[in-house]
Amino acid sequence: MSSPRQSAHSRTTASVHPALARLKDPDLLKSDAYIDGDWTPADSHATFVVNDPATGAQIAHVADLGAKETERALIAAEIALPEWRRKTGKERARIMRHWFDLIMQAQDDLGAIMTAEQGKPLAEAKGEVAYGASFIEWFAEEAKRIDGDVLSSPENGKRLLVLKQPIGVCASITPWNFPIAMITRKIAPAIAAGCTIVVKPARLTPLSALALAELAHRAGLPKGVFNVVTSKNSSDVGNVLTSSPRVRHLSFTGSTPVGAKLMAQCAPTIKKVALELGGLAPFLVFDDADVDAAVEGCIASKFRNAGQTCVCANRIYAQDGIYDTFVEKLTAAVSKLRVGNGFEPGVAIGPLIEDAAVAKVERHVEDALAKGGRVTVGGKVLHGRFFEPTVVADASADMLVAQEETFGPLAPVFRFKDEADGIRLANATDFGLASYFFARDVGRVWRVAEGIEAGMVGINTGLISNEVAPFGGVKQSGLGREGSKYGIDEYLEMKYLCLAGM
Image 1 (cartoon, rainbow, N blue to C red):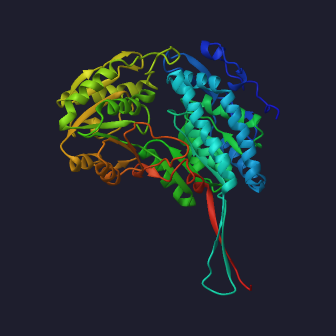
Image 2: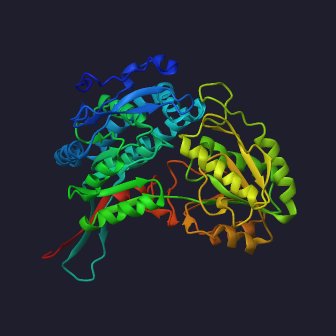
Image 3: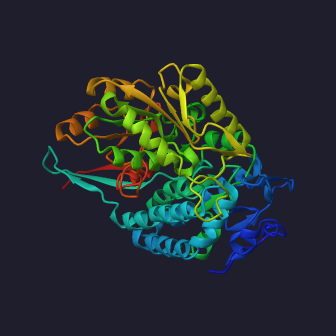
């Protein structure tokens, strides 16, 4: 398929960033929004700046759209809907599989774009590209397996059937911490189900979303099926997406307060909503655990993406019997983590996304120290947005780290007495997204896994995310599930048929 029509400003200026100047495919760098198969500047020609969080350098000026352009994107999605949903699942799957292949072929370039705008280490960014692509591959396969049902009728002469049909035009608002995976995890099931969608990516990381759109176009995804609206003003775009009667489903990943606001705004038009919200993940290490494995799992869970994930271990609990050993070994492991620009070889911890994120980590460390905590490694800003990976021992429930997500490379370690105490502490929050624990006793594994109030539980591992498993939380951590065979149900409506006169 030929490249979409480009505006005069569609290609972004990459010369200011050496890594992006070396892209194998520079056409992946875009600065205009993608609506109805075309690259679209703002009506006002306004733009906003995208910066490299590692250096502060300007990467691009991206189109700053508003309410009118968002409405046009929804109209484009609505017009595209009838033809797209008429396609068979196999036809949709063929296009999606081609899209997956193109993403994987562009893995190096997409990783470089992500590291430049988001800051995570390049190897980690490339890993996210593969992870994000896996949802397109998975749901391409699921598109062929949208099955209905035939029910046993309680009456002679009647046949009862259930159809599953696409819900309609969808909208998605995505975060900056996983600028590819959080988009594909939402759009892949929607498109596979036969829906069309409008995506509003985070203002801090729009370039990855636009590169995905370019590859979708090359794969043959029809115009209007996938639209990307870029804007620095989330409320202007969000108000249109939540209020428009054209939109039948809205998905959002972000904070609980914003999710609650979007849910309320969707109520007048009775939209279906899928919300992946805040987490305050507990990480428990029991006396019978393999402590070395627990330290490795804690590093993987806590410090990936510099601690900027919604499933990061935020509250780390070690049982009394192994507390000192665990803190000692965790401190030693954390001290070996290299901090630096994500493009530098061997870097494990990149920059935080913006100055406010640095200030929050500083505030949490200062609060912990004021309340009796003890920093065993790290604890300070190195320079710019780089914060030392930090361990705080003797953490207590009255500290900020026990009550709100840090979203940074800070690992507070709390004590707990026994199994019941550990479960109580893990559940002492309004949130319930991810949770983790390390133990070897089989009975304990089952009791704790069933007792923890969370949508996901990692047992003897700090890495739980994949395309096959259902991702989502309970309590104030959200509604619905993404990924897995269950994820496509979010974008389908059941229709019951009662056929009489047989």
